[in-house]
Image (cartoon, rainbow, N blue to C red; front, side):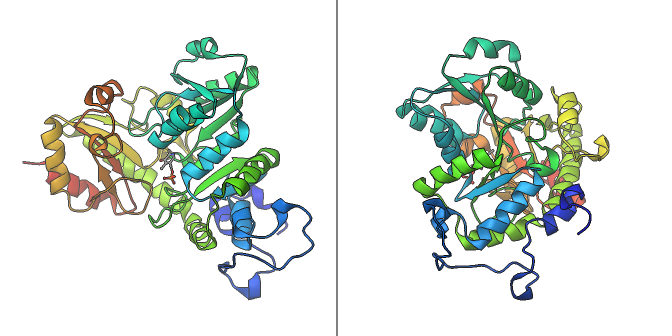
Length: 396
Ligand SMILES: *Cc1c(COP(=O)(O)O)cnc(C)c1O
């Protein structure tokens, strides 16, 4: 190609980045190399020996190259799940005696990892309001090494001061790490905004087909190599067949996420205007407290703001409380009542009964997650069909 691949739009990179040249036996689709080990080819370092756990089979290599290209990064690494990517990254970058600053509203697994597992290893954390930079300096300690945030929170879709986070991390020489799962590289490019590492649960949008769990770490070659060495020891490698599926799923990321952006914005507007709905949480609505910030941060480079880049997840509350929420879930035909998000099927769940069921009711209320809150992960079904289904389920 005479034009550098990196200068193409993300749709083109999703198809062509990482592809082997020449193609294996001419195969247009990268085959799956389901081989645990490979004949030695003069490797001198343990970490270069070709073995599935060492994250370097041909299926890993093409996947790493494609993922890195999407975020304009030097390197990427896949892991056996989003939590494997997150735990391995934090264990690679932090040691006993280190301290980190963490956004207070986090994915539950990450919160437990930091509050329980890292604490047991002597790595301490202070939870900060990532919306309020004035409080961050007071939380700093001489041993603070890292600042950890999420692109948008789940299930309330809060949007933290991400540019403030980067500036603060720079000023205090902290590593800035972001979980970019909810935004995806289509809607937000954290490395281009100054974050050191972007993490993903590829289980969600990147794979998009609700059939594997996988994770990824994307960033500079030096940092990603540090994480790879730790992953080689901890063993949370992604199997080649899952690599193959993720590689396949990625090719339609732009088509899926662009549809989900539009569809979710339309559904959010419909819900916000419906008399049975008390409140809708979606950064694409002007009523969202950080709508302006979300407009500045999210969206495809070069795309008009009206096109929206606010993602495929929203949450809402009904006026009738928990009983009305349960009635809605029972009446809906298309959305499947299931946890998780980011797939082609629309999924619906009541966080108080699933993801946040482990918390006491008053703790949930404090976090702003009442019994009546409903979370919707919008799939790629026809938007009008989904709205008609919501309308029949809300009515009467
Ligand atoms: C699902 C999720 C994770 C965990 O990913 P797994 O693939 O389930 O291990 C981490 N962060 C966010 C934001 C998620 O939605």
